Amino acid sequence: MALAALLLATASLTLGAPVAHAATITLSPVADSYVRADQPTVNFGTATSLRVDNDPVSVSYLKFDVQGLTTAPTRATLKVVSPISSTTPINAKAVADTTWTETGVTYNNAPAVGQTPVASDTPTTTNDVLSFDVTSLVGGNGLVSIALDTTSSTSKSPPSRENPTVEYRPQLVIDTGTTSTPTPTPTSTSTATATATPTPTPTSTTTTPAGSTVIALGGDVACGTTEADYNGGNGTADKCRAKYTAGLINSINPSRLFAMGDLQYNSGSLTDFNGSYANSWGAFKSKTNPVVGNHEYGTSGAAGYFSYFGDAATPRQPGCRKDCDGYYSFNVAVGTSSWHVAVINGECTRIGGGVGCAVGSPQYNWLKADLEANASTQCTAVLTHKPRWSSSSFYTAEIQPLVDLMGANKVDLLLAGHAHSYERFAPQTASGSASSTGIRQITVGTGGRDSQGFGTVLPNSVVRKNHIFGVMKLTLSPTSYSWSYVPDPTTPFSDSGSGNCV
Image (cartoon, rainbow, N blue to C red; front, side, top):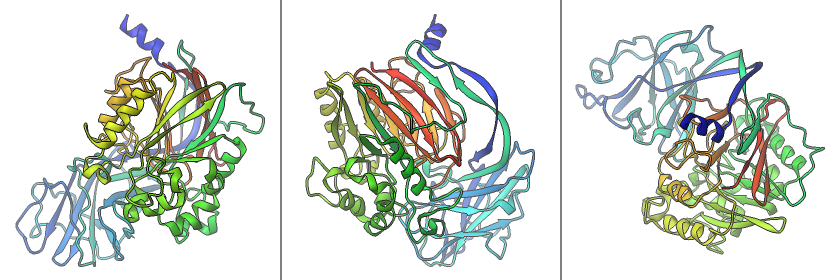
């Protein structure tokens, strides 16, 4: 009986024809630690942060166990987060010895580190995600050791694999070239219908159903004008594609654009907003409902973001242009009815005295009152930059108290960005159990910046795809909704379906 209910509540998957695509493996370290010259016999293996410094000399070590490769990878990228910015790069270097242990390595017994950096990256903003091309170190299956150091005398402490903030832990993302795997194709159910095929969705001939409203949405959008891959706004094949996703939005011609955060890299400065975002997605500024992301806070108080969008980002605080709450709500007219939409600020440590998403915080109390005041509205969506669930490390559990409120108040859709990929979940409860009357989360972090991989697939994840760029077309009806992914033609993929409001 329970199995039958589950099958009715979620889309069932069948395997379609094989599809060629780039496979990605995302690995967490099996060991990491750091060593310090001024404490040569001390082990730091259980620390929640690593350390790189030139005074005193501090070197971080990371070890990954690469398995599942049948050929040499086309690319391997080490990703770590730097809590502070710098003008001096952090270097990734080869470590030939893989016998060191997390709880045993010290400065006195640490393995030798290569003299020449394999790759370098500079943290230009707070909590910047650094990417190191370490393809030359990953020749196949087996243990891989990598060291991080710097010539800077300002210490930096990247989160380690023990760090409580899961999304900040180090990763090794391995691209393995083109493989052929079945594509999941959801079939219709009693409460939702869906199709997922790797072909572009035409937009020019799409007709909006009478009494419906069309929304375009996506996040993680515009590169900075000084980034090498910006290329005068033209981007490259796999980075800085905001110009092209803006063209997709134009073809959809939506009533509203939900801009899901991390809209301007790398630090959300007003100069970059005016020089890059404004020339792509900025064409739709007058119809945009923005969401603040973590990269916006690379500028103090997210002042660039709040100044660029003005009162559209701060309708509860007119005139606020720095250190604003960043959460608000509005209604979308749908025929003679409406949808209620709440925008939350998932950067929980930036607001509410550092506990901005906790039970009893100002944002929690506001969202509770807002959802309860709109209980008579049948259909409700919540917009957040960071998703609650993800089959990668790019999610946050800090918003769980707010998600609990969404579950209690029968929110239909939780829409997110942050993870540079596309992922759709079946409806589920706030605690993550499948439920036909639960919250459907869809993450659309494919607005143009770049792509990120997946790790362990979470329960209730129905469709996942990376190495794509595009936006989602969301059609709101008085008692239901439908979605259709609209891809950049250079990265063909589609996912579409519909659901009823609960």
